[in-house]
Image 1 (cartoon, one colour):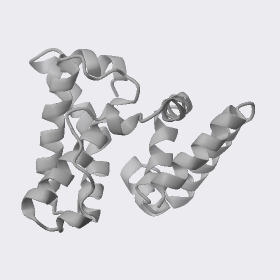
Image 2 (cartoon, one colour):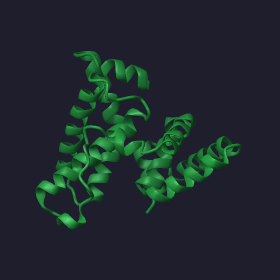
Image 3 (cartoon, rainbow, N blue to C red):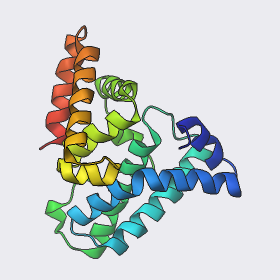
Length: 196
């Protein structure tokens, strides 16, 4: 698997290198985006459209320097796709205006990802855990996937292996937070917001 830096370099280029970068992003992120769309009144075709639009915006933002690296590419892409899906729902008129969240500029997802310094610190902490831990915790707490679904989507042998990995990730997170009580509070607030 390509590193974040290699993917960024590949997406700034064209041809075979760009294709490899796009394939790495697809393999790592399509399942999460598809799950989000399906969970929110969408179809598999909708998920493909959302992901394609999200990739286009991601590439454009990277080339224009709008991607600052305050989050991982996967988190950034998910935020873009989430806003693209909201826009698509508005156009399909599946929900009344009263039920739709305020309109946000989905071309600048950093606005939604990092609303304040505390969130930036939480994201840095999550990045410090490593990609595998970040993904499993986001899938469990944010996407609210079951351990069986996480095992399938992330390629763990079975549900128990996924549980063991989540447990180890939480222990690592607790160790990182041990000397940072203010950040502990911010993380609890953030986890509370994403699990509501």
